[in-house]
Image (tube, rainbow, N blue to C red):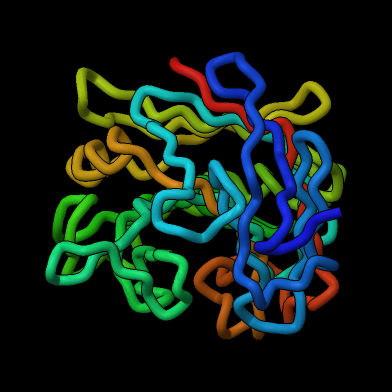
Length: 283
């Protein structure tokens, strides 16, 4: 049973082969009925708002600026299992990273509109920062997107690339991930996703993705824009905060994700996603 900000709920991650426990934190407005954490599994419900439900990984049960866990990703491999079977069209189940905290122009950490120091590349909450979207997905497609910013992580940022340099799995292979028997990865059942941040020295050169399920695999690289990848290097090296979110709304609102698929309709508020077996290790 999870309690949001006031009692601790622990999740187990494997970091370089060692099981470690971290706190799950969320805004006070988050209903505990939408979140279930057990061992290494996080189940997340959508809820009544288009903004859905968002969680962060922290060292302690607090939204203070020093509570969040930061993970270095450059030269690392992130892997996890995800169940999208209850995530329909116009929904977005996301596992992503942000260079929290954001900063005010005076160089001080900025609490932002939510009061918890959240920031991202779309200035949600009123503060900019670097973002790496490991997965944004529903049963019909998934997208991998790095977002660069105008200024280095760890200080004031004046703007970020809202759209990012994205790659949608549908354009790689429309049968790569979809809810059908003839798909390489049938999104009606859980599958694993491994994402590797391949570096040469201290420079990111590739973001490799491999999805596996029942002896089948679907592999693709994120953006091939080498200059964009290189710009992401320092933010990934410094460390980013692991964030989970399930949100969505009208098809028009979510068309940036679903625009080429055949799905249609509003995201069901009853949608749920399950993440499990999360690990981070050196390549």
